[in-house]
Image 1 (cartoon, protein in one colour):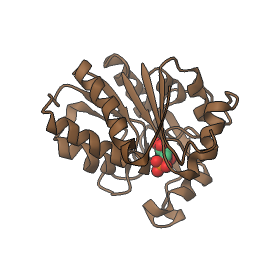
Image 2: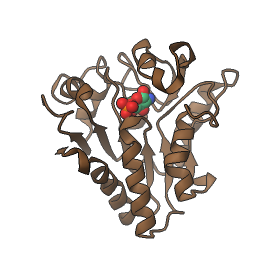
Image 3: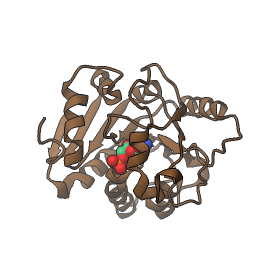
Length: 241
Ligand code: GLP
């Protein structure tokens, strides 16, 4: 299912999907993605949850990815952004939040990743996974070439992606070279996936991802194989679809 929306209803529509899931199943597990695309969606969802006074102590959150060697107190970390946009305004309990945060280069990175997949399994899998898309088709930090069978893992972040994050970190040399991310397999195991994209810069990659061949050169193209995918686009991102 592909929804093409006016920009002013994009965030509310994404939030409605998450909100409906929480209403249907208070113990839901929801997977979130950081990035510019999801800021307004998170804000809208917080508002809906607070306005409608639904029980916000029952659901669990998982986040897709994080930089290695960046503290969760650093405003550039995915954790910090999620905390400001979502965890703090909702005052979620620590046990509701599952995050690959505060990973130092020194620790056993793969162990943290494996534990994360185990945690997803313990929670009964992810009910609803939100995704953004990178300009090269990455989902999470799964860059082109990543095998579709990957579980949560450590990645070298592509130069292209690092360059697109200069505004977040200040300069290219400050953008971390490694990250941890849910793997393509971990993502595809979610019961439902919502891919969000807005803006003209995403128009080309959206065509490749949704209408091109399913190939590991375009990681998001794997989503064509998911039985329960919703794509939410603004008109700019959908303009050549
Ligand atoms: C990053 C993140 C992804 C995110 C993507 C899109 O690289 N690792 O999880 O979906 O960029 O970001 P934006 O929404 O800012 O375009």
